[in-house]
Structures are given as structure tokens and as C-alpha cells.
Image (cartoon, rainbow, N blue to C red; front, top):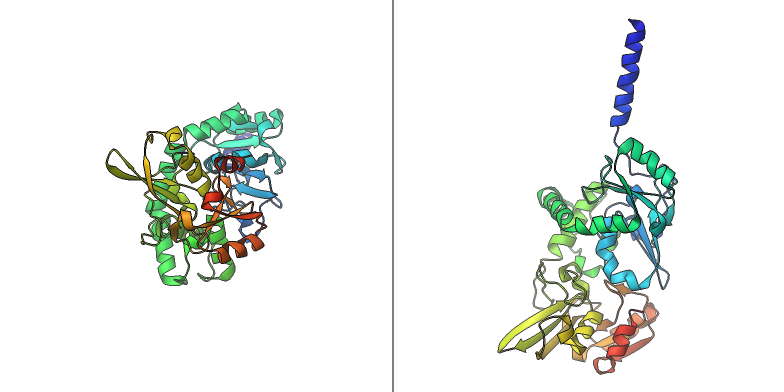
Length: 371
């Protein structure tokens, strides 16, 4: 009887152990390669890189810039604009907890361990043996990096819908409540390029008092997704959520600080098209027929967003800084300013190479930015 009881107890302990949730947090010091106070958070969704470290991906970019993401999903969302300037593509090896070459990694797809920003989890390993050991315990399928990326891309629409629903039900209301009761109302989300920069500033300057990570994330998401996107003033370029850049296909509303607009007439109707950066706007301007049903259009106005004020300004009157160390959603950019003084200040602060007028910008120069 005693022997039977011992066996039952051991079996119960094993079941409990197997049922324990898989932790994505690092057991030691995480390897974070972004710079500045925002290095702790994902630049796409704002989530903590420490909390979701074992699904973290990163890119090292030309110009010694790095970006690190909480998940392969956030990498996929950002990669379209960066692919031409990526020097290294990295992922955290679950076993060693070090960043490794993502293209050489073995991924376990769809295990019992929960995914990050997706229902279908994806965990990477440096060796196939380690991937098999994880698979034996947690299930799933061993795939290549290409297959993991393909899975993340295919499920993107469903994953975005899932996270949007969760945010609408929980995070936005919570963030709005905290912001209205505890935060400095002068916080302007339009002043930040990325959500992790906004989040770092709120945390560093105590603009909302002392917040826990989940509270900080709720406030940042509310300001970034709701307040920033719904800013509807005549001085800003207003972008609807459904509007995509015809050149790269990215949703423009996610990048209001970089938005540009071309208004045109076609067969008697006045229409407009939005872009997630000046570079893509110029690509369209030089050959509109290349990007869809835009043959024989007559351009009537072009507006870009001033980098400092976020105001919509006339593109033909703007000044553009070339070759700075500030990247836009599509990598290297032409940074627009309302006047020469602002352009000169920016060029001095950010290692710009030259200030150009609208008429100085050529098709060849625009495409060279992608090299």
C-alpha cells in the first residue's frame, strides 16, 4: 500500500511539473541590443523584452542601428521597411538565451508553450538536438526560419484581430483610466517616432507617477493607438486606418509622424493617396502608373509632415535632410522641415549630409536610399 502511495505521489508531482507554464523570461541577464532608455521595449508593440525574451528577435542595421522585437510577428510587421538595410537578423536561442543567426536556427512551431502576439508559438534553437528535446516535452513541429516567417506572415491578419480585440476590451479602457487620473496631460504621442520611445519617456520622467509594467503598457497603448491615431486637426495629415501606402503596402496610420499625401484629379474626380514616408511618396510622384490605377493622373497638391512640429506642410516649399542617422518606417529617409533653420538644426544633431529642396530630389536619388 505504501509503495502504491509513493508511486501515485511521484506521478502526481510529474503531472504538476509538466503542467507548469513555460516561462519566456530569461534566467540570467538578457541580451538587449537596442540603445537608449527605450531599449527595454519592443518598438512595434511596446511590450517588455524581458517578459517575452525567449521569443525575441532583433536586427542589426547599416549605420550601426539596432532594433529588437518581442516576437517574430513584430519582426514581420517591421521588416518590409528595413530589409534593404539589415546586416544581421537574430533570434534568442531558448537553450543558451543568447542571440544567434535567425536564418540558421531551428524553430519549434505550434508547441504547447504559448506564443507571443500569436496563437501559434514559435521558439528558436541553435541546434536541432535542443529543438528535438523541447519538442519531446512541449510538442510542435521543427521547421526552418523561412517556414517560421511564412507561418507568421500567413497568420498575421488573425493575430492582429486577436490582439486588437484584447486591447479594445482591456488595455485601452485601463490605459484611458490611468491617463485621466494619474498622468501629465501634456504628453503628446505625436512627438515620438516609436511606441517604445513614448513608453520610455513616460517611465523615465514619471509623467504618470510610478507605474507597474502592465499599467505602463496600458497607458502607452492607449496614447499610441487611440489618442495619436485619432488626432484630427487641420494642421495634421489625417489618415484613416484602412489607408495603405501604394508603394510598400504598409498601413500609414501607424506612422503619422512620417505621413505624406498626394492629392490628384482623375477623370474629373479629386482623390488622394497617403504614404508612410517621403521616400515612397517620391517613388510614386516620379512614376505613379507603376503603383496601380494611377495612369494619366494630374497631381494638384503634395503635403509632407514636418519632423519637429508634425504639421502638414507643402512639399514643394519644404527642406529635406539627406543621409541622417534617423530612420523612418522604410529605413533611410528624406526628413522634411518647414524652414531652413529647422533643417540645419536637425542636420547638425543627426549627422545629416545635405539639405535639399523639392526640385533637387531625383528619381535616382530616391531609389539610392534603398541601397
